Length: 483
Image (cartoon, rainbow, N blue to C red):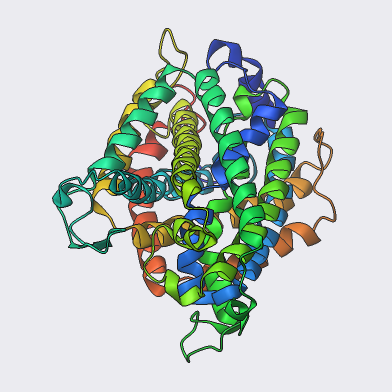
């Protein structure tokens, strides 16, 4: 049995052609773009923008978004080629299985838990912060012990400081509700997501248009604050660190690729969904960040989990404050919906390959969804959302996402060498330069992240390697065809 054995492209395509026996093809190109926009516009825009500005880049957080988008564009072009070639659920995991072998596929599949599951937990924590702000406006105050984790300090809108609680219950409740919705079906979830995407895009545009007239140019001076002598704290290294911090918010096009087996026309829809959502969101991100740091000095966003609301408060449009928070909650909801869906599809595919127990690929007889996987991650993600501080979650998600992008870029180079004549309805342009650029940019952003992020990644991946040799290798259908 070889851990480097690849899964033949013909087998993958055969699995895609049999999708009517499993997942239903219900998603149009428009729904796929909305799926991507739904995942991209969220925590990175409404919460982490302030953190990246205050701790790393200052007003130049706009450059952080551009740098992150460049890395995403290179990786996105590689994703689009793979998604059009291999329209099967599983995203980077499936692509790695076809190019670099089973062990690397397992590594990337395990890494995607950091990207999707902990990404959903990160957004769940931010969602709870904005919910508290909304409730406070109406004089509703929840028990402080049940609105934040034991290891973080929370400052409410009225100035109340909470030094650690028991559990972040609102975050757990929203994760649970969305997991149950996903069990109901992809089409139903996508319909709700489409509505949420429209609402939050309208609000982002309103924030940009209404806030533009209130920009104070003095807040942009200096545009790139001088580095304070520590890597990643302002200066050019701060711009890179800011890009690494907000990077996970760009994984929307990645989440699109996990839905390939549920797309009506994946060869056409995948490239449109992946690249279309990336272009739309990059433009909105840069404009939003420019306005936000122009409304309020960047250092005032330190420790603020709701910077968009803080910035918009200076415009005088107080009657829109509540609407803004409601729309942000809607935006966060759609992000969690896409991330939870992406994670369940990756584990579904790994289970079908025998690398995980059959439990994870059980399809509901009525709803045709991997319902047991949804229930498993409802519990798993809830534990992280309820007990882990948002900053720790954010860095873990970013480094996991970047590693996935590096491996996908390498995969395109390998596939072009091994299978140059395989049908490709979309080709990554300027190969090998685009994939190599993707590897370099994403690796640089990984380097810019804190030391603690690397330690957590190494520990997590070590656990994954152990699990592969204990269970996955012995039960792999590719390496054990008689099982």
